[in-house]
Amino acid sequence: MKEQYYLISQLPAFSMEQGGELPVSWNSFLELCSRFLPAKDFDALSSLSLEPDFYSGKTGYAALDKWNEYEKSLRYVLAGIRAGKLKKEFNMDAAGIFPGGISQEVINTAGTAAGFKNPLEAEIYLCEAGARFAESLAGFDIFSLDNVFAYGIRLRLAERIRLFNEEAGIESYKKIYDQILGETK
Image (cartoon, rainbow, N blue to C red; front, side, top):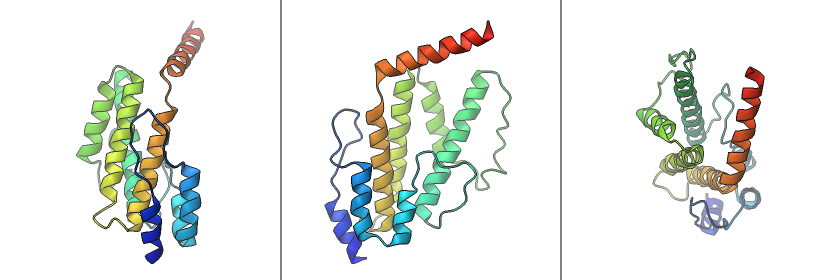
């Protein structure tokens, strides 16, 4: 536990805002964590994903399991909303997939994101909502392993936001749209 105090105290604060450089990269964060976390905990942190495998099981870490459940259920609800907009059939009965149900927070987040006209704004909103959820995983003990996991999730999301480029996104959208229209002619 003493090692986590040293680890947490070395982690710089950062903003989720799109502009500006982060004071630490994911790889630098992992390198630092490798010096202070037991191998099992470090391996769990290293496997942290912003897009967890839909069929993956429990990790054995409550914070990571909650994150994975949040992210999977969010993607599921977003898929249902998109299917509805395209008038495609989608089974929204999630009881077999999410035995505990889907939280109202996830449903509200997906609904808000789906309401954005600009896909970039929707993606930024989803990253910021994910960061807020990650913060809730940290709990009250700032020196806990859950706080390390929450920091890692927020860092991955902040890096993702900084990858967004509006001009490149518009160009990519047009290319995909043209490909779809070309296939339907």
